[in-house]
Image (cartoon, rainbow, N blue to C red; front, side, top):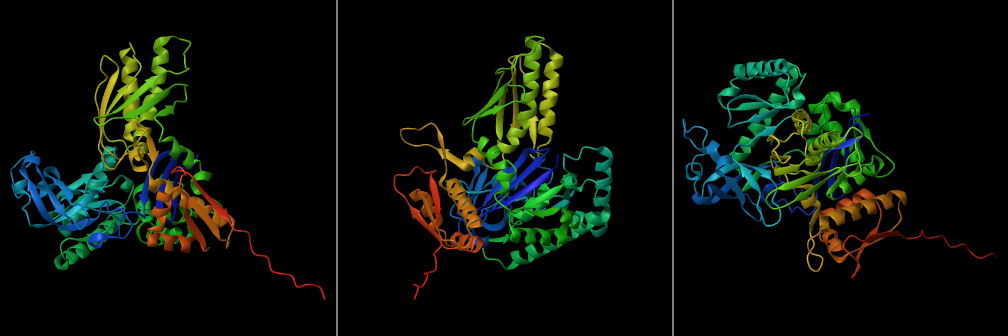
Length: 510
């Protein structure tokens, strides 16, 4: 089956799904509403992830090995010593962390990059080791040399890519002041393509340096690509058969980006017409399933994924499956299916930190090794670094996965308060975006008709209080609409009704 990248563009958020052989493999959601008004010079209504900001150090906390930096948002950003060590001019310090006081000083203006969006009452997470990502390469101004993605596994290809990039970078003198990371998508790329990408990155860095010289503090001096172009840059590879976009304007933007950065992808860009792209491809149902703890396995068993403050626990259950050859074979078959699925679920759910897996007990060491190998292969598809421990005598496997964004359950839902506390409910923003998609769907089905849209008061307010969002919705649907609040409705209930067309009056017969 085809490998596709599906891009669903709505008034309030952009969603990107990577589908391989008919299965959802990756999902990314970026809210383009409810994210502030572009404080500090950033793009209004967008995530600030990967933005490069000229900020000012507010406080240095030696006991925490961290500093708080004003980056123009409501809350100061958090800069740890690990992310600030590139600012310490301490040659020979070794691999350990320098004191934060050797990296930054209060009142100092420093260049930082957002590596995690602000969430709730927490400010953005920052790094002083700024990078600019291109299609094939990543420019790292504070790092010398050429590094390669760990997902480039073929040694001959690693040697070829390293030789090409090192060759032109040394000839141009780039490696005296900066370095490169070669991305996985560069596999098979020629010198001309790599050199062109490096030249584009050099232009971007020169523009950034120019802005830095005249910018006020704090201010955003570099924004990453918009969600559609970023999806093309980061998710489309040689194995991608098609990129399907359900918005004509976004498709034109995609074509413009591809014409400049990746012309070979242009023939693979397609417009989806006639309804919800995610519904048509079955992604909507899979996305909803990610909010539930139980995941069914093909063999008849299941895994249960439960998060706590300290770790995420995954339990493997045999369910209805029983192998005719006995208990050991039953345990092995279920554990194999579970190990293959766990890597996919960690990616889709964006789970990070410590994960403990309780496999069904196996007595055969060879079977244990095969299950761990399957788990390693499943995790090997991940863009995010992971580490796996051996299986304990109790059948437990510990692994860590780097936290790069909030788990999807935390992004889309929040704890229930009150009498039903203990469960989770979709956030106002999540329901509001579902509501917006319904409004757009009804507008497509009833062009030019006025729509009456009713929702829970918090959901109605979330939309009505966003003038940029309302303007974007009007432009997208090309019709009149009214958003009304209904007291007493549950948060996840909403309705869209279409007014009947007015009929012309017929003059009376003479």
